[in-house]
Image (cartoon, rainbow, N blue to C red; front, side, top):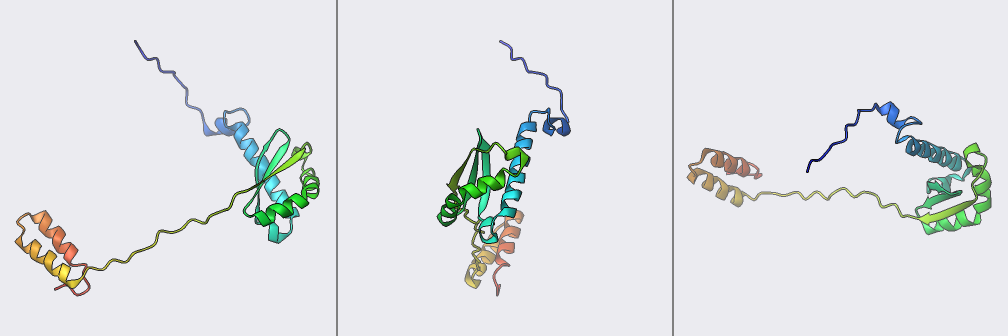
Length: 153
C-alpha cells in the first residue's frame, strides 16, 4: 500500500487573500464587518459605542455583541434606529434583522508575582553542601543559588 502525496504548488500570499484565493471570502467578510463596526460606532453615543461590537453577518441578520446586559437592553430599544443606520452602507442595505448577544469581556490578568527570598540559613546550608560536593557543575550551581540570599555568609 502506498501513500500518494498531493503535489501542491506554493501560492503567494497575495493570491491567497485577494478576491480569487481560498481566503479571499474570509478577508472580504472581515473587511465588511470592520466597516460596519466603524460606521455603527460613529453613529452611536460615545458611552455606548465602546461596548458594542459587530459579531457576524449571515443570511441577512447582523449579530451585535455587547459586554453587558444594560447595553443589550438599550440596543433592543434602538433596533429600528440601528437598522436604519446600518442600511446607510451599500453593503448592508439588505440587513433584515439584528441579533444581540452578551459576551462579557474579561481582562487578561497578569500572573501575580511572588517574590521569593532565600533565608541566610538556607544560603548557609547550600554553601556547605557546595563545599562538600566534588562535582564541579553541581558545586557551581549550589554556590550560585546560595548567592541569592540577601546576606549571604
